[in-house]
Structures are given as structure tokens and as C-alpha cells.
Length: 190
Image (cartoon, rainbow, N blue to C red; front, side, top):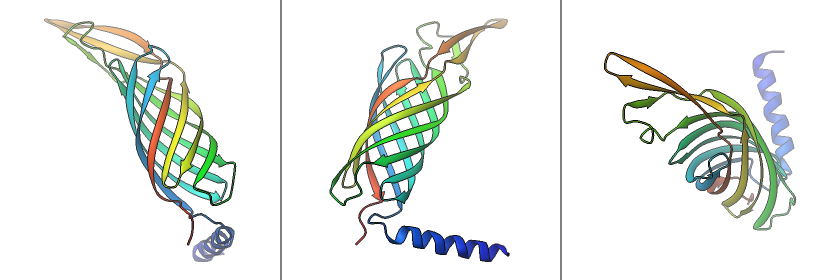
């Protein structure tokens, strides 16, 4: 079977599967949020983008790219997720639960609290996951995500006259967040 025939069959099958759906299949959400670090209890803000694909009226699969920042650390995460809606009706408010997993990269920001000559290297990558709950209201989505990840080691280098000194610290990139987003696509079909 040729590549063209395989792509044609995939296109026909996806058209048949999604033809009975009440909602559009592709959605991109972008938004802001607030979070609190579970390791140092500092609050901060986050920004994210989350494209997703609806496999049925009740289920999304997607990818999340998120950056979370507070006065002592920053965390970048890249993850895949799934989101299940409790109702497939076309009401404006739809509640959901979800689960995601991916990579977290933590960086310690409190350089000045140690010494003005310190610079930090980016922390090592760690694996993490997050359960989520929330609801969609039209093209607005609100969710609570609990990001759980293992500790990441961060290296500090102090530059001295005639040499340097290396320090290390463990940073836990786990955090609880409240996120709001505007979503393009994914709404009811006309």
C-alpha cells in the first residue's frame, strides 16, 4: 500500500469519527495563572500555551508548554495531557478532569541572597506529572493543576579573583496553580 493511500484512509477515517461530534476538533488555549511553590511557599505567576485535539466530544489530548516564575525559582515544563469532560452536551459550562506528564526544568533565582558574584546554571531536567480539575465556559477555561515533580539539582558558580567556587542546591519544582485561558477553536459546530 502506498503512502498516499495510507494518508487517504487516515483522512477518511478521521472524518467519519469526527463527523458525529458536536464540537470542533482542534483547540489552542493560551493564558496566565498564579501558583504557590510546594517547597518554599512562595507565590508567583505563570504563562502557558496549550494546543489540543478532540478525539471525541468528551476527550481532548494535548501538549502544554508552561513557564512559572516567583522570586526564588522558575520552572519550565513541557508535557502531554488528556482531559475528560463529564458531559458531551453543548451547554456553555462543562466540567472536566485531566492528567498530564512531562519534563520540568527548575532554576533557582535567589542569586542576590547569597552573594552578588554568584551566577547559576540551569537545573537538571526531572520528570513530573499533574492531575487537573476545571471547567470550560464558552471559550474561557479555568483549571487547578497540581504539578508534582522530583527535586532538581542546581549548580551555583561564584566567580572570585583568581578562580571560582562551585555550590549546589536542590530545588523542588512542584507547585499548585490556578490557570485561566482563552481558547481558540474547539467550540460547538454550527
